[in-house]
Amino acid sequence: MPCGRLEHARNFCMRTFDTPLFMASIAIIFSVGSMFEEKNDPTPGSIPMHQESNMSAIETASRIDSTHRTHSDTTQTDSMSIGSRLTKEEVEQLTKLHNKARSDVGVGPLTWSSELAIYAQEWADRLASESCKMEHRPHSGKWLQKHGENLFIGTAGFYGVADAVKAWERERSLYKGGVINYSNCYSSGHYTQMVWSNTKHLGCAKVECDGKIIVVCNYDPPGNVIGQKPY
Image 1 (cartoon, rainbow, N blue to C red):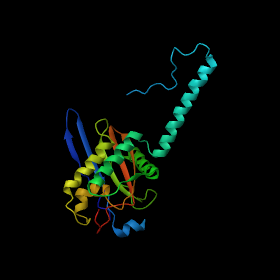
Image 2: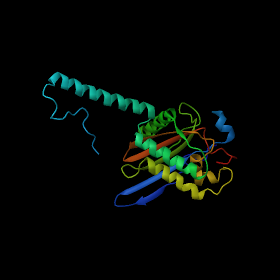
Image 3: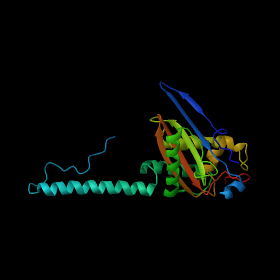
Image 4: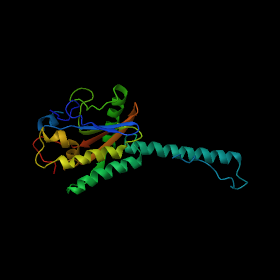
């Protein structure tokens, strides 16, 4: 039974500034049995005023159109390679922060998976459209959970994807070593999933709704297996 279900692991951290801010995160845990049951961008195409006088209007229009197509094609390719609506910079942040935490305990790095990112984006979009609250995928049905999962929610514009990983990594101080059980997973399950030695691939997504940002990260193979050590 996953210990990181919403009703058991809502570790809300309330913060108050000039405007109310909040963040929260939840993780899941697998039993051995259940694991196998299932600011502004430059305008593209701008042409300097001092270009050669013999460039015709048709040539100019063609060049602008070509530049626009190139920019559009590149954006589409980048999105496909990432898998979710994250930017390249956000992917780099997420991967770097995960791998720094893993390196600190002598565990090998994770590689980005566009398939996991697609999977994460699908769930993030569903959460935004239904409740704009954190909830893990169920363990049956169409939205069956197949991977490890960490979730984060916070005030949009104040928190970003890097803050999600930093919040999960801070649980390191709460992990006292030993095998994963239904007790220690509540306090440090996000962190132990991040550094799980058998996990090799990472894919994440984000969505904004009702003034909040939700971050979903999925891991494969999943970590937090009852009775096993993270590393």
